[in-house]
Image 1 (spheres, chains in turn green, red):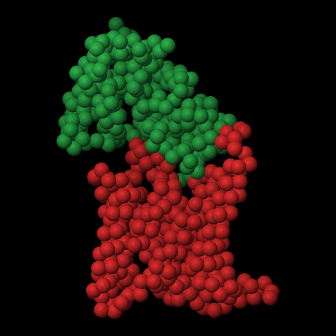
Image 2 (cartoon, one colour):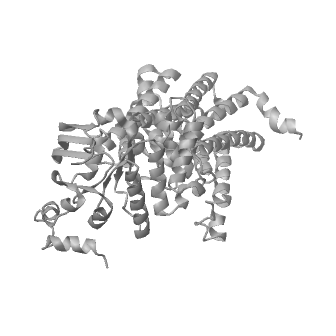
Length: 259
Length: 291
């Protein structure tokens, strides 16, 4: 018996999303517990990004509902921090690290209100937590890929959110930067924050996330990551008769032990 | 020749003072708007928009005759239609925004040329293209003042929304921002500024005031707010310098202003300490700056 049942923060009930005529998500039933790290897994076009954006209310649901706590997530946007994919940013934009992190405070400001001392404090704390204090005055192109990713995580932190929706945060990062990011996300989860990330690398997901959601338009599996990433499930999600791989175990093995 | 002759005397003529006034007013708003256009890679959009104004002007002429207000409204409507149409096209179909703009403005321009060919009196197109800033009437000046004030006010009040929508529209949307409205609002302001500039300066100078201060400032600044300020300042200083140049050297006034802006731009491209030409050659390793 658990001491206290995990408090489910995100609930999907029979969620279906259509992109024009095509089915993007079909009948998803899913609970994402509070204070966990959840990897969204699946082949390209499986609906990982759609699922993240559906939480933000960007897609009209053809059926079903999504709840954050007890409320509709659209009414709780301050609790949600969304991290877009890296390539959507113009890194030559005339903006410094600190100014990007300050953007996290913008939603909580009134129309013509300036950043208060409290806001600056939160920005400083976010910069500090992500080890960016020394880089705060740099223009954002003068950072490494891992540092750039951390700037946007710091912005999410400064927002004061507790649910972090990350769209492919590991894309384009080298091994060291990936490890750094994993470490950081594990730390966040220990502080009771909830992380939901679209991830491509199965081995990385297995090592660094406690829970997994395997999608292929419909939900294939959800639960503890090791159970989700069973050979049978991977086979169902990734092969579907399209993959060239004969043996699904081979797929996991090559990603699990890169030599 | 003393300082008074050099700087003050030219503006004792009313038409000079009015010309300077409209250049300053439209330079301020053009300098602000241009920054957003340059950063969103819509630099050529102003050019496209300005051509698309023609059918509106021609149609207004046909219906209402040469009334300033009618021409203004006609141009405004045509420009807004192009801007809205391409924003919709790019959102609802596969076509990207630049291609949508390009296609629409050509169709609009063709419609304009067709309409002009039906006009009984031949409209002077070169006047539209190059304008005559020293022929600025007090009505023109009033329009310029109103447009400039609206633009400056929008930037002052909507600064954060404009910054987020320009830098990271997805994040803005995730925070509940209405990015679509910001985008359409900025397009509408662009049209408004172009139309206001059309009668006094013509298309070419108007585009110069949009783009040149913004790209010059882009080469110097690592802060969005500072880029906006610097861009507006460059536009203001170059307007004064250009009009003085045209007075003393006897050159066309609009062209002189653009030449001054061009000089600032080339100087920036050469000497900008971080992003300039010379820096790139002197310090090829300068991409990794010391902390």
